[in-house]
Length: 107
Image (cartoon, rainbow, N blue to C red):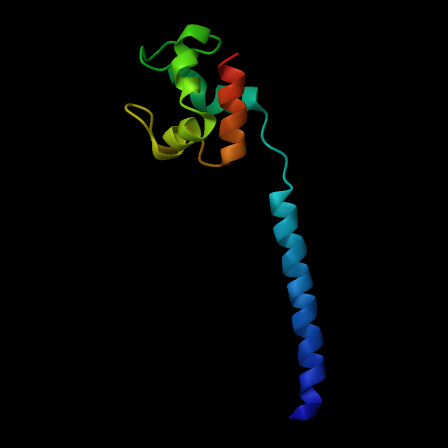
């Protein structure tokens, strides 16, 4: 039994090394292009179809929302708010993607 311990340790170390690199590569993914995300998931409502959804570039509409803080806005997108469904129709977006899109839309 003792003779198998060393090879098993080496296998486990290699496994952990591979798993670590896989995790790092997932974290290191670049955020999606905000304009592309807007066009695929946000434009239908934020181009004026819904009166309560602030339009892209409408600084007056975005100002009170931005005053609540970016974390609050990201939470609203993630959980959904009023007519906006959870994740705002972007199921593959990360919190960083939402931040980038909010910043892009509010300018």
